[in-house]
Image (tube, rainbow, N blue to C red):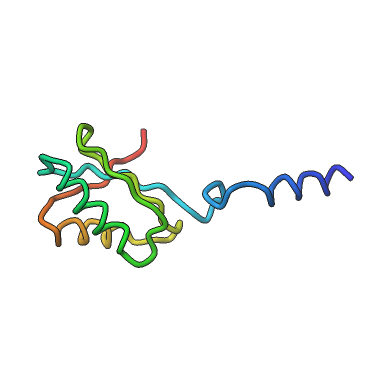
Length: 92
């Protein structure tokens, strides 16, 4: 009965909680206005494999949800394509 309850609880977790997904934080250089944020968001969200992205102008950061085995160089290239430089922020 306990095992059944645990399995049901795990199945009810949102997909973002499953370990097959990772959040990548990027430092995005050169954004100066809300249009910059929109351009970066659009570039990231339209990249195949990206499950979600949000960008913060004040922090100069983007948070991107991707599969665990995703090549982050693809994200950096997508941002570069719209005119900005980015680098991965390593977790503490």
